[in-house]
Length: 145
Image (tube, rainbow, N blue to C red):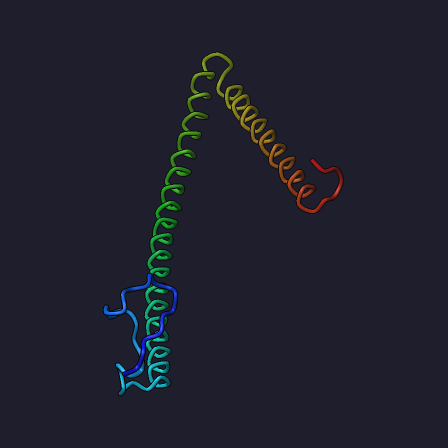
C-alpha cells in the first residue's frame, strides 16, 4: 500500500480520510502522460480555432453594421444638403421678390447676388484660415498654437 504525500496546498485532512483531489498514476494506470498532453494541446488548438472563427464572424457583423450605418448616414446627409440647397434658393428668390418693388427687379437681383457672394467670400476666407492653421499645427511650420 502506497503512502499518500501531502502537498501543502490544501488543508490537511485526517489520516483516515481520503483526499478526492489527490490523484496518483496508480489510480489511472491506462493513461499515458505524453498522450494526455498531446490530447490537451489538440483540445486547446481546436478551442482556439473555434474562438478565432467566432471572433472573425463577430468582427464581420460589426463591420456590416457600421457599413450600413455609414451608408444610411451618407444618404441622410445628402438629402439634408439637397433640402438646404433648395431652401437657400427659395431664400434668394424671396429676397429678390421682396426687394423688387422697392429698388426694382435688377436692383433686387444685384443686391441679393452681391450679399450672397459676400457671404460665400467670408466663408471661403474662414475655411482658408482654418486649413492654414491646421497645416501649421500639423507640420510645425511658422508659429505653434
